[in-house]
Image (cartoon, rainbow, N blue to C red; front, side, top):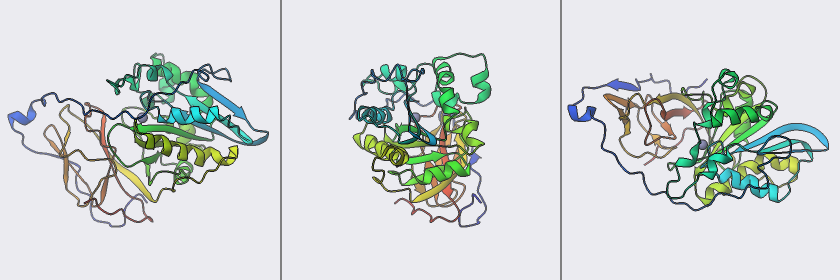
Length: 345
Ligand SMILES: [Zn+2]
């Protein structure tokens, strides 16, 4: 079901090899690249109090019944392209004709820390807000800025019928829409405009994403996560707008046909977690890169080689500087029934 068109046996992903003393040492510190900052954080002051009793949530109801559609921005505070889109739509006074619409600014406090001289910092206040959505964690006694904020937003999340979580990427890569493996979420992903690739996966070992909340993984409600392009590019705002309009346009009477529908459908087979602080790719791959051959070494993790387990393996969102215990890359293959992507040159 989740296998590609060829039935060649899988090769091992992680292969230990003898290492020299130098290879076991931590790498010398390197500076991050200079990021291009083409957009600035939006002024969200009209929306921060919310209009429904929940700060940062703008909620509208149509005259006719219909689904509750939820668009979420700023789960990561430095990814504000989605917040720019929601702000623009709110200033245009969009309203649903049918159903309910919630536009959410998840973590404006993190965005407030944004400093173009150190743009990566504003991702969160205390912890990654896209790893706190496991019910046991939300119900537990621990407290952090993001966890407490997730608790405040939860009533909106657990009543959503369709949820689009707007993100962008630090490292270069092809835009994509991620979903869990539920049929409803995968069907929703296929209808999101402005991106070329749908990727279905099981989430991260390090915590539960918003789109993996049981509301979406177990039931008929659907959720997708848009990775619209690099964080601070105007094209990322354009793509986010196309994706949002493809979801809310029909209920709000707005054109929803900008941007193409995804042409490729991939399924993640392997989530590679960095086991050491020494994880390094052999070259700075961009997300969406397709490795032609099985068994190709793509990274080293301490003494281990990380190899592609099958031919035409797509690298999904390589994290070129992963910390130990964090996702370094995901391997994905073409889902059965769709055409394989051409290998990169
Ligand atoms: Zn993000």
